[in-house]
Length: 468
Image (cartoon, rainbow, N blue to C red):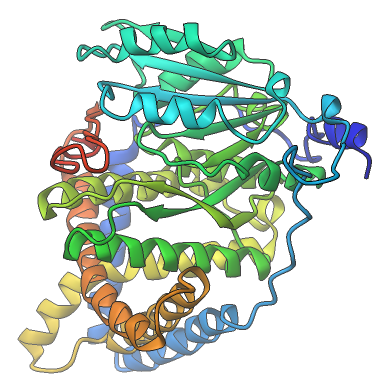
């Protein structure tokens, strides 16, 4: 494929599915969450009381286990070759026709890390005339806005947008204010604490040669992984997530966006009118919208985008509560559209299996354990839970083996054991989130994570976004 064709292909063509209208969901989430919670708890009660209940669980475990472990053997297709670097010896490519990329960063009170990010993004190995930076100062009061204005003078391809205190929509609102002003065929989104490798665009842009690709997610890794138990756990979690997503895509399932390090095709985003401002996890919401309109989301393991991990359990708790709520929220918002007609059977099966493992089992674990204690018998869902934990253990170890090439196998095994202990917090997070969403009135509120930069003081002390 020629470079001219590459530029044309990056614009893409929407799949032949009825586009989704911009959704402003949220009004009936509480009722839907209550119905879902009551149904799941009712199923647990029925399994305990019905004489055939254990056989239903065994059958479900067999089916889910077969699907999950089949992922471990899914064949991953090689990625297209990277675009030639301008630094490569003897390479004289015509870079003037490469796809235009617009990079978006929403920053609120990021004075300690924003200069490092802008300098890195302004130095990417990509034609200077083919990409630009759009930095959104989201009503900062620590000097971030002034610092961005100075950086815009130093770097001609940096544009700064200032949002005042009346701006709404959180990160989604900030991105929506910026992207209509851009010209990029591809839109890249990074967090302010991101550490971006110089060859990232060279490796990601070629994936958009495939007309069905609506977005690409780059694997995330934790920059301060050696700080303590919590950051090591997050590093292992990220390795597992990247590996798991790669296998899901390879088997015909869903690739998911993770916010930091996401690339979106402009024509795909235009179908929805931008990011959804009625959700607290813009990336997970956009994931559903893209798949429901026929787009694919491949995942890139190398290179990875680094970010700071939270160092305290309190911060981790708030952050994971937001992730769990946003992830669960999208099922409540789009459940009527989750059908083979839009997703296809393979994506639908993948979605059901991971909803079962990520949300249904943790939600049902509390009443299951309570009934098991009352009836003096093992929890009914123990076989299904065991299958999910076994898959997670193997997948986590495989993820570490693929992403960490310098550590020994013994070190990876010990890290996997530690990672599995760390990952148990997800059961408690989901159980409390699904209960809270069913009984408490909903009010969106965005609270950012504070970033201090590596070596510049205490790492990440605030909570991520929360919603109540």
